Image (cartoon, rainbow, N blue to C red):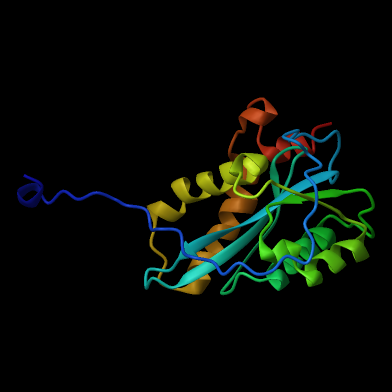
Length: 201
């Protein structure tokens, strides 16, 4: 019947294998599932996700969410999943938020080698950022990031094909900063968009 009607199923691609490096330093979980903040730029969470071009080539996105209102405050996509990509994403947020030094700000991530690398750890120290990490193999410890990436893929990535790197990058930027932040209501914010909650009087 499927052959006669031309029906087929849409399957998700398998998660690619990553090479796990030796951790320079692993940090305790400072959030302990308390995914809330009393003010902006107090608690951030971050993670990587993989994406595909129509050719099958992989690209990687690093995103940072502010737990105050769940807004995407930085999103950077590149060909390689590296500590440099993580650092560039944090630099982007520091610049866009006008932060001179982020003393006592908590940045929560998993224990990926990009976040435990000497380069990233030393960068966070230089910026006054306190690192917090999920328990290994426990995605619930970084649930807001898991939810965002799931939403991104279901509402955008799985619905389209991207033949060029530029078209993929532009689509992700538009989704993060326009559709997600300013147009999409969020239950965490009582039905308001992240930006409505962020800049409420």
